[in-house]
Length: 377
Image 1 (cartoon, rainbow, N blue to C red):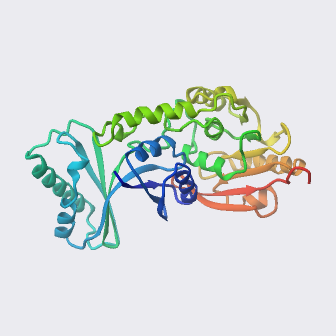
Image 2: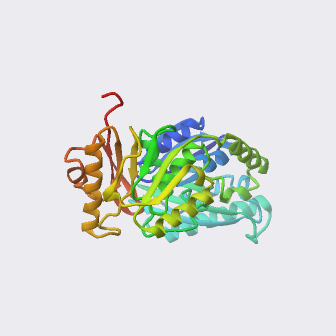
Image 3: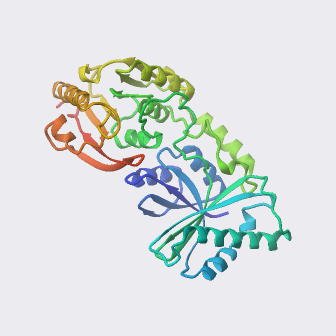
């Protein structure tokens, strides 16, 4: 069955998510702020949840229509074939948002959409009461300038919840953002990667998952795994294919460092849970005293910043260490995310080769890219 799917994304990562979807072989319909819409089928739902590294979640788009009265909202919602998705025992909730729409009351819109779905299912199944003891279906009604988009969440917990983070530290970076940082860098298998402020190890672990070609969703479950709409054999087939695609013998040179021994211990445990502890070297070290471990390497890091944790004096020491390191090793590249708008001047005293506005949780950050000299120059 042809389906219209939406991969939601943190602002600034839409291009990364679009590329991931295209690599899975699906046709992009449109890219907007915070989401990428594409065509797929039931198998695409499974593969998208298993393989998308930088998307927040995967939604099934049910319909899009204009509505500026509650009657229009009700009738157009009821006209949809909800019985094709939700079984008689399905547990479904309705969430919503409304921006610049006549129907501005979100609770009222949620109530109308819920009633319309119940009426449709009542007529389809010939029942008036629903036990709601089965699989979960979260319907979202998004109203923007009187245009309604109805979606159903296939992911459940956000896709950043890979399942490997069993130990944490203060202010961790989201796994989806860490994966995007690696994909936006020049790093690939065979090059050295170092995170001098690794915290609980998210950036090195995400790099290792990419380097080994391990699907980020292999160690977790998804809301749609229990849907009757999707054949359970698809999950078995795609998980089997994902395990077969892992490059167990890929040699990776990844190092994670942190001045906090508790962070290093947490990173090691998380890497072990992710199954990549054998290709990451974690050690306690001071980022202000960084030493080279080879040539033409890449630093990818999320150092502490003022709005989050860390004294300003300590942050300046880290910047000073990065500056000295890059001056002494011009063949190395630095990819750094921070809220500091003066990081370019503080680190290299030159403009970054590229910069991209992103969000780490609710914090607006900038992803600075300082490119090193190419080998031989």
